[in-house]
Image (tube, rainbow over all chains, first blue to last red):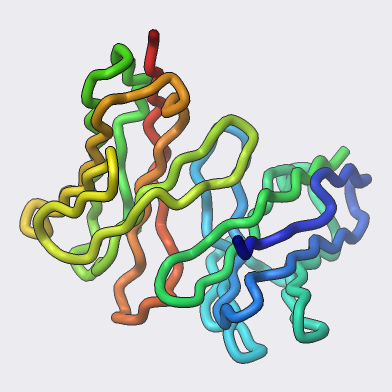
Length: 111
Length: 114
């Protein structure tokens, strides 16, 4: 069964460093998303992406964040200068016919 | 602020019983609603979705939607210990597309005890 895959599964980084989280959406899906979940809190929307551009973003998605689809398969989330409060699970999702399917997540720990 | 609210629980039911999970939403423009299951440390897994008022059944799961009351529920029949997880209710943002962002509730922790 097709699935969304994310790498790495766990990333530890120093505060102030840049990180890139990678996702391979389901192949025939056209809409892609990043969500995050801080430990013990709700899943929060960050950004949606369609046709090589951002279609919607939340207040969380500030200038420190960017997304890119560098080729036909990967979808990336970059955090330019990580802060302690960026520590969370980051989920990529893709949507083909109205339902969003989530990847297994990347646990980002900023130290 | 568009909100989705769930009772955080925990909800504890015996094996074989019906578990009833509830969710309310504040945005009257929301058109579609989703139930996800999330095991600890894992990603949300789609159980089912509902767009129309009334009931929708899929195996042991029944979703119910009442747009007038802004209320969504999920019934799990014949609950099994493997159903023990956090259940997330999500509403698709208003805007009429099938691809808009999801707004999640905080989740209800369900424990099914043998």
